[in-house]
Length: 74
Image 1 (cartoon, helix red, strand yellow):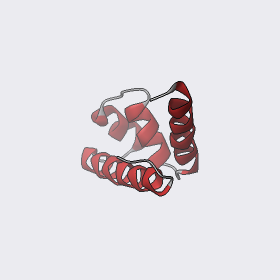
Image 2 (cartoon, helix red, strand yellow):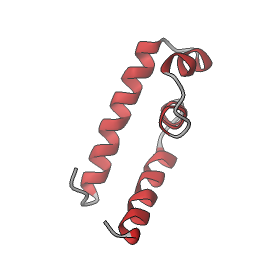
Image 3 (cartoon, helix red, strand yellow):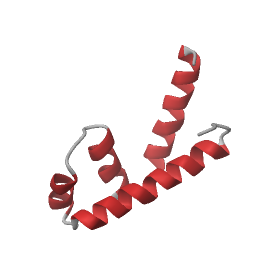
Image 4 (cartoon, rainbow, N blue to C red):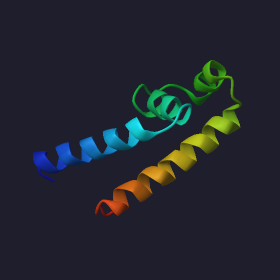
């Protein structure tokens, strides 16, 4: 991929993340930007670890759908 493609993809992902409601945005960013442990995120957010895993799974599915709608092949 070209640098331009990478920038467009980055902007699409950032746009998706900006539109997420909390706590989905916080959980997603903590896990995938800051590479925090699920246990730490759960404790900080007052959630069970299972709830964090479920929220991450659903958010990844939404991200996939968001990108496919914008023409990305995954």
